[in-house]
Image (cartoon, rainbow, N blue to C red; front, side):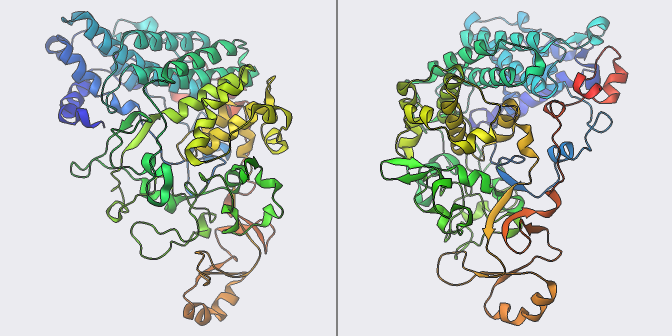
Length: 595
């Protein structure tokens, strides 16, 4: 939750739940009784609106990893893996929930009872409509067509309760109307923990880009108006550019400029932050970013996207001789500095340790340090208390560049005020539009083979920049979905290269740290030797990971190899649960799941 609202969060929660508890089951959509104690005692003043909307702050939040996507080797079960493995279907998916949208509509339907300054009232109406836009777009991303309700329903609204889905086009236009109202009526705040007009602009830019690319790359929708959403994304981004916000340039110990963003105890003065979530150790408000190394590792595919610095220019990692078999230490040589601020490097010491941390081969070997806590007391379960970005200026610059490139209108000046600012932050050579257009990277072109634009090279390179800059912030899976690249999820992600059985130095001090052996018998026969050298031993026989060429190659999680089959376009959408269809026979199963 946000610090500015901690003292009234309990009251807001009480009133929010009071509204929810007067309703019926979520599956009956927004059904409420016609009288409610909440209506009689609340929604009278602007302060009532503020208290109620404080309960909505949890509808926005950040992320500290990219599970599940081609950026990570993720070892736990997940709904995404169940979908790709074919075990998610209308019988198992679970019923959809409408309680959050219902809570927003409950307030909006009662703002006519509030007295006070109309501008203040409209600010909170705009805030609620912004939240409704976000919540509804979450639904659109899952189901595409959904019923649109602009108010909470009463027991007498039988026709509305049992209506069918509205088309995606109507729902998204309604979402954009909500966002436009919010932008026109909300005030800005001096606090990065309170939602103001700039947050609505950032949300509109994010949603508009998502919808534009989804419509462009999903012909099955039969919606041919992507360009207007690209324009909306550009307009929203431009209103945030060149003004209040700038990129965070502060170096923090061995984390570089990323340390000032992703493990900072106080983001409240950070110029890049548009909205943050404030965590507080003393109040027991904490998160669990420290868990990342226990559950996942980063992928070779992501690692190879970071460019190599070659004098005053850059080149692809794939253009480096012997790139495919580089050692753990060698992959960091002359690379985009963001690689070393995201991937754990040899010699890295976690905050709770006195010696360099060993990479875990069980997770692929490439460990994430973006969001790694910088004090030992945070490296316990649920004990992290550094602040989390929700919207940051870096994302806005990427939205602007991507929308321009997709439209084919990106200029060098556009690059200089977006992508090249991100590169300046870490000392990378500037991107040149002419080079992007003339020298299309075949690796990117093959990966995103469906990409189209008169500036194709720019589209591909902006996608690379987005992947790198926003790595581990929870965007990658949705990016693949909106770009129509779900097939990239089929291949089991790979980790570091292992030349074969042997002993390896993983910390860069010249002393071996791990041993890789093929069989359990060899591991047993050499256990005294390995113990004497204090080696961590990995026995490939019967292990959870294997190598792509049996006795050498890239690490991958054995259970994931050949396990996934992304069915297009079916898996871009979530099916409705059979219980929801039975409860409301007018609902229709998503047509790609109905076949």
